[in-house]
Amino acid sequence: MSSTAVPPTDRSRTRRAARAAARRDPPVTGARGTRLDRALAAVLIVLSVLPYAAVPLGSNTNLPLSSLVAVVLIVRCGRHMPVMWTALLVGAVPFAASFLRMFFTSQPLQIPGSITWLVFTLPLAGTAAATVFLGARTIPWLSWAMLLSAGFTLVQKYVFFDVLDTIPFEGLYDLPGYANVSDFSETFMQYVRRPFGLFPETSFMVGTLSLMAMALVLLARHYRRRMTARDVVALALVLWAVAISGSGAAVVVLGVVLVAAIAPYAVRHAWAAVLLVPTGLAGAVWVGVGVLQDRQESFNWSWADRGSSITASVRYLFSDPLVFLLGVGRGRSNELFLAGRMPLGDLQHYNPLPDVYSVIGRVVLEDGMVFGLALVLFMAVMCLRSGGRNPLWLGLCTLVVWIVVAGGTTSYDSAFWVWGTAGVCLGLEITRSEDTRETAAPWAPEGAESIGAPTAVPTGPAGPSAHL
Image (cartoon, rainbow, N blue to C red; front, side, top):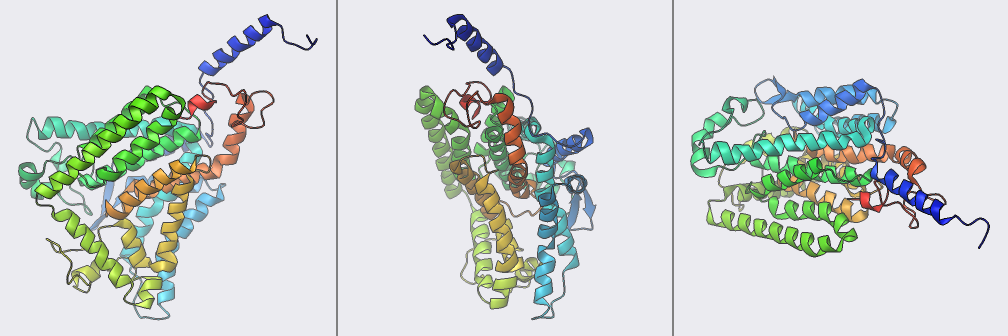
């Protein structure tokens, strides 16, 4: 035997030490900034599930406190220039489109609409800054926020709606920019009873929680972290809330989020592949079929109204070359619908349509292909890349959920996670190279070229078993 061979006792001791090290949690990676920065980032995540934590602005809109916190975070993240440039370029979209339209039409800039654009899109850069400051610590804060929101949704449904026959904290749901629940509470309790949690309506809740669940999965895989019991419970409560919502989005997002969460674990454990994946997908299909049947058997006006508003906006977009390229202007889609100028002729709808019921549809209609579509594509690419470290299939899952939510589920520009999902992905992109160096140095095995080396990778938190 070679003189350099390791004695059996030393090898045994080395293996025991490696197993002990693998059982220990790795140091939190990616955290930057001061304690104040990280505290503000945590506050932003909590506020992201509290849309009614806002200040009224006139009679038709509001200023979310999350946007104020986002401004502070963006300024304090100034040394990471992609965050600053994102905030400036996204905020400039309606102004740039209006500037170019001035050369072809006398239409003035819509000041109120442009201000609300600035306010509602701040979560994109703000969430990127929060991800930069918190790093892997984003995971527990996101998990707690999901537990808060999904837990309240379930209590609202099973305790207050089904047992107490009342809407809890009804006075809370009264804020300019959102429908006042008190105006239709009796009708709601008699005919609807779909939970909406801490949000203005069910679709807002479903979209927010679905995107948060995808963000949690992305962060856990990016930082190579095992999901704790808290994270698993948070995901389970979110999926439960989405399943009982009756929202059409559940037909798609439930299965996609389940695949994203379960697949990495199933790849490494045969019993999970045999039991969890088929069971999860069967449950998602069962919920989806139930939603479709319920909607077909009931008076389903919301799908018809949403589809007609989107179709009419697409028709109008292609009716004029100038509108196609530069849009109609921020805030003007509402005016066009109310003025009866939208081509609704043969489209079925049960209520007057005040606007296009799609965030993506409104962005493209108001800012055109040059600016609006460019912004949508930027956010789509961020979702697809999912930080650059996650596999492509997971990016596709994120993109699908984002398109379903932002394109066909919610029409609120103030929906934080419509913008925040791309913000998380941007933050992971910004810090990816630094995070790789931080995690690779203490955990890469001797002789391995990278943390993803296929040989002698430890089975602890930094190895394959941490990729759930």
